[in-house]
Image (cartoon, rainbow, N blue to C red; front, top):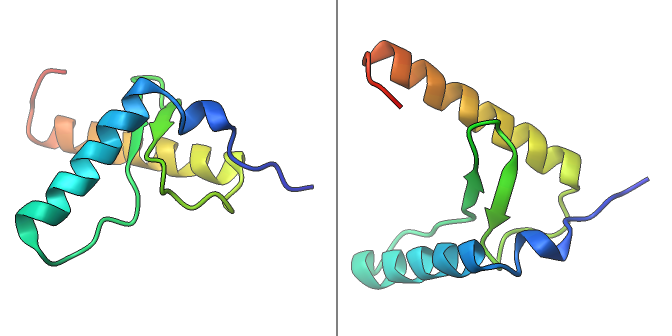
Length: 84
């Protein structure tokens, strides 16, 4: 059973901002490439992905990536002793 990414994740206002970040990064650096941007909230839930993110990933794979990113961010926050 394959569950693809729901359109609500890449057809919202946050996704438009992610698209702008991705486009402006390319214009600024003129080399390099961002493969995808994900916005997650403090509960490690995916809020949005940029519109060109790989749609063949299923929702559960994206959730795993989001949770891993959140965990890494929390570890860095603890290591550098910063507030959220």
